[in-house]
Image (cartoon, rainbow, N blue to C red):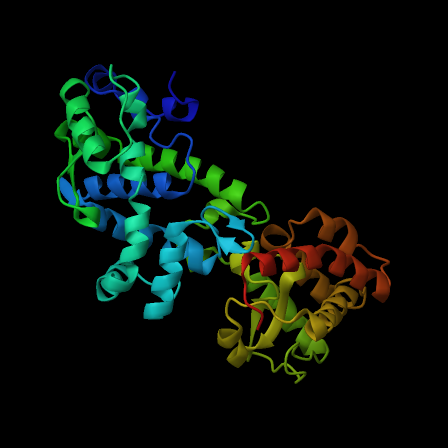
Length: 385
């Protein structure tokens, strides 16, 4: 029986008649690590670029480039953490390459692949480990249809076995005789045609399965589905919040959370206390005005909780007082302008910004809801600024 999610793909019946689509749908079944998802994704990407044959090495490079942003920008653990140690070899290879190359989290695929070539020797151990099982085990669903069971005791035996199976069941790829990561991968022309005709649907299926795997291994991470590729900066929704703080600063002096200097109108940024890359939203309760010159240095880091949270909460309470001040209707109107993009959290709407909170109550509500998110980000590996 085919995987229900894969079964929803709109693949022509003609392919089902000529190719074992059912076994293809099992290529990501029962993963032990994230490699299966990134292996198949890399193959589909390469085939979509008209690649007909490649090597383990080139596929690994594609895998590293595809997982780079998730690991470094969003601190996603590809296969979880055990006893404080990263389990996943692909994740370890990315961390190693970043330390060697000092490339940023938003490096382009070309930059990443150039850095891989430059540091090929240092990465070889990681690459060899990545290819120990996945290229062979990914085809196991096809092997179940063959009369003879595979002998997993040696690489050369399984490569020969793959060739034998391919005589009866057309496999997506077969393997060459070169050793280690130089081993060739030959894509079957019929599978190339099927994958090229259905690339978008197949990549969507892989992403769906990958997100389920990653979410299970990163249970505290919010919005994980949005953390698989670089985000469009246009998605950030800060203008209305900036308008609100502009209106507040016209009426009252506001001190920068980090410098304690008075914020100068038109010379500040609106930034997140807990990094946007973790929370993946622009909620008002997590936003603050801060000196523009500090924003780049804070970047994707967590502020120290003490003493900065108390200063942050003080500014938030000033905002709270002013949006509820009947003598300042212009500020309340700016606050209402934030409803669409910056006020979605139920707890913030029903508890934090309701009328009648004392200063102590406001601080307690804010801390009760923000501290667990802050601690989760810290556990996920976000550095403290």
